[in-house]
Image (tube, rainbow, N blue to C red; front, side, top):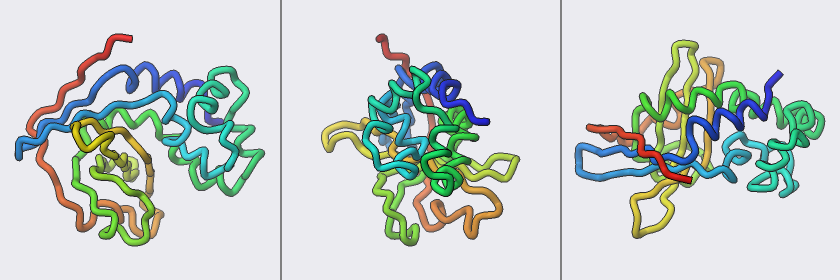
Length: 183
């Protein structure tokens, strides 16, 4: 069974308190920052429950205290849990995606009927026939800071596992760096 506290620990130890910097061939610099309060959203918990106590900082604290578990989520909405189960199972692949994924300029209108409004997309295909997608939204018009806003895992069994990268604009990354932020 999926352990949300283990996922949270992975998130804190490998993704939070650092800037993932991507320098593109066209001179653009993209800084990606993971926020603790975004964990529940990245896991897709909002697709299981509409209760705000289970998302944001409140959800983060509930996972930390053991009040919010995969078992309790499954009990709230079995079908909803089934739809996001892959996100949770393959959440630890995010570090690999950040370091070795391909970057695309994302145009939502090219991805069919998606509601995801992101500027960039990190994509990686894993050997296990997984298609990992991390969507990035710009924090403000005056910065190069982006935050992950959605994490989607597709498999070979999905109708179109390349849905999110077809027709998107590949961006060549010439340098990647990880900068640590002091707490």
